[in-house]
Length: 237
Image (cartoon, rainbow, N blue to C red; front, side):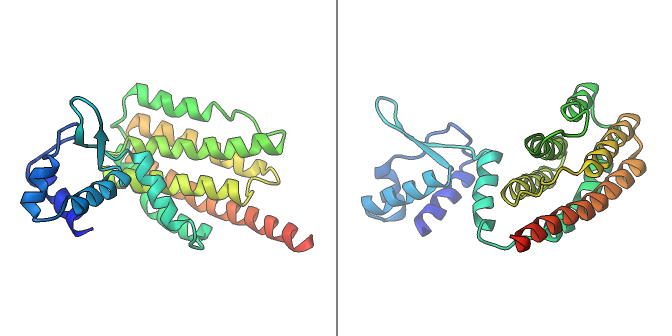
C-alpha cells in the first residue's frame, strides 16, 4: 500500500493527467527500490481504486485513469452500506448544504439547464396511481437534486449533495419508503421544485435559499412519516 501511495504522489508531482502513461515496471522498481511483485501489487491496488488502467498488447502499459463521480459514489456508498444511516442523518446534511447550493446558482444557470430541471419535474406531473409509479416518482424527484448538484460551481459541494441524493434514493427503495403512496409528499415536493426553478431563473438567491430550506424541512418530516408507516406494518406482521 505504501508503494501505491508513492506512485500516486509521483503522478501528482509529474502533473500526469488522464491517459498519460506511467513509468514502466523496471523504472518503478529502480525508483522505489522494490521487487517486481511489490510494484505489480501496487498497480493492482491502484487499478482496483480506478486510478490507473492497464492495457495489454502493442502500445500497452499502465495509464492514468480518472475516477468517475459514479464510481466514487459507489465506493463511498459501500463504506456506508453496513452503517445504520437514518433519515435524520441524511437530512441534517441536506438542510445545511442544499439551500446554499440553490442560492449560489440563482441567476447563474442558462436556459438550457433550467429547462433540463423542468424536464425532470415533468416526469411526475400527477400523483401516482400505483406503488410502482410512486417508487419511480421518488427516484425521479431525487434525480432533480442530483442534476442541480451537477451544476454546482464548487465540485466538492456538488459531489456531496449528489451523493446524499443517491444514498437517499437507495435507502428509499431498500426500505420501501415509497409505500404507501403519499400524495402530500408529491404535491409539496413538486411545488417547491417548480418555485425553486423560478427563483433560479430570476436570480433571486434569498428566495432560492428559503424555498430549498422549506423543501428540505418538509421532505424530512413527510419521509419520517413514511418510515413510521413502514415500521408499523412490519410490527403488525
